[in-house]
Length: 209
Image (cartoon, helix red, strand yellow):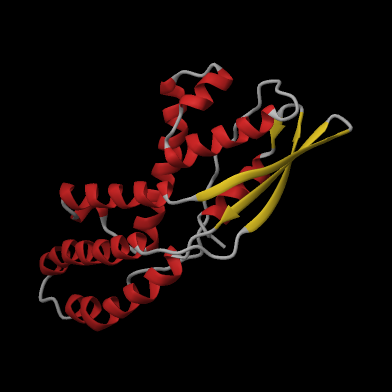
């Protein structure tokens, strides 16, 4: 089988705190999430005295990781697709990030440690899209690709494949729903949320398990 559907793995961005205390962490963690997933950086910049350029780099990192994950997961040959199709995948990636749903429910303080309670709502995008892609792959693409008379003909089919997959994925993203919310707690020690916590939050929100 040419196209692969691996288990998702993403590297989250590690961000450090800035000496906040108490309930300020609620706004701080919310600002980080908004900056990372929704590209809304104003609150994060104000709380951390970070430039908009640096804040945008946080969102761009998440965006690029997810965009590449989509290409890798569905076997999109980026060297054989048009710029228009590439831009379509960028719009899809942005839509998925904007549809991430989360909130900070509580912040608790004990023994110089702050515990932040998050409610994360994973979406069902991967579940509803992968079966549709598999059906298309086996019913149409694989048969045509296998019988292509030349490699050049096979390469041309890659653009057709990428365009059709983009249609399927975009429709799935537009109609996605959310799974049962997950309550996740993370601790803030030395003004820092651990890399492991950020990675766990990323996996839950994007439903990468």
